[in-house]
Length: 102
Image (cartoon, rainbow, N blue to C red; front, side, top):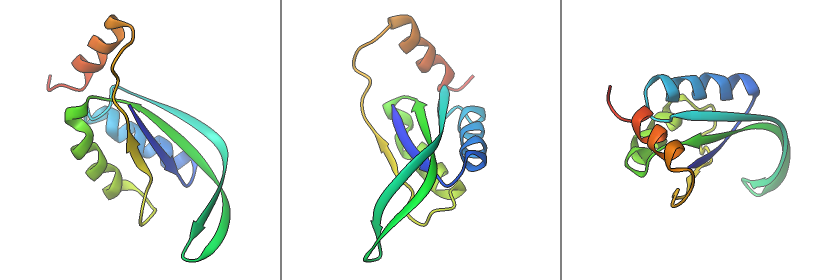
């Protein structure tokens, strides 16, 4: 499972589509309209962002992170993951299938 923030809904759609097409993620949920408060280069900033919630496998995290960094507009994009350890076995099998070579 992964969490990524994007500068806009359009960027989130572009990155999300690439990740699903390239089988780096089985599914991407986009949540638009988030307000972010953060410290950047010594100043507190505020901005609008869109969130990507990614369903993927641990084996894909390195490739997924590299691809997001290549596609993203931020110099330091937020790409974080956590393990999927439990859940609907049918869903977890689907994630495995959709993020494996055809």
